[in-house]
Length: 316
Image 1: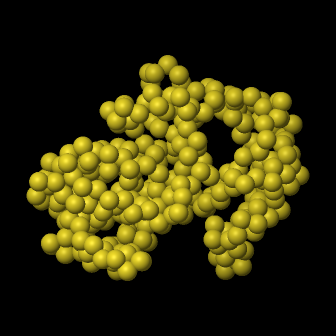
Image 2: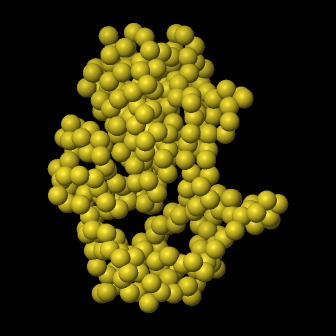
Image 3: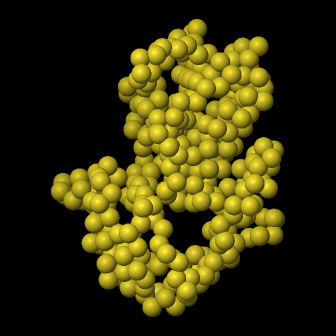
């Protein structure tokens, strides 16, 4: 007999929720996905698929579709302030061995009450529904994670002291299919204890787009290479996204055999690893398998999901 499942999703939560729904639906489970955002987020970093994630996508029959949408990026070059290339790392297109900095598969991007009988969910529109289980696939800022973590638990958010911003600029005649990376050692932002600038920087991701863009412009204007061109493009783009780079580390991936976390909500590796999407697909594949295998004992299913996946997560 199939289970009735609810997934809480969020626009930042990559592909874990839909991937889990795909695998569970194949096993005759009923899946409902609740998305907090009114639309898909198209801003931010492009999506890399690596290692075991490629195998999962192949089993889902999606590789040919992804190949038709691949980013035309042949590799990564490090440049100096004059644009001179100092080093280049090409993509591995051989189909063998590890991926390089550029992946072979790279594309552009309620309250609850849980008990032994199931999960009762109270939606913001006043509806109340009951499910056999709830999957929190609601991203690195997961509200489901906050709801199930014991009160004495250490903060699962590991701040890496990094902030990223992404936006589109018009293509120039000198642009190629090699990604350029320019390191600016003279532009340093230092966070100190009791420094008033801490609050400004740490609240950056909650600020308005205009405030975020002013922040980046003030610190990088005139810094060499093509920074002025990029900042001029930032002022005109309608595709801007800013984020703090964090990781999620928690020993608690589930609660009471009725609520389980997936993807960034449980184990966000940070975008600088290039493994977030791969972790989402692999996690969804493992969780779906354990739920199907132990659908009469979800606590065991979640324990096996943790036992099987955590070594992979610890590695990435």
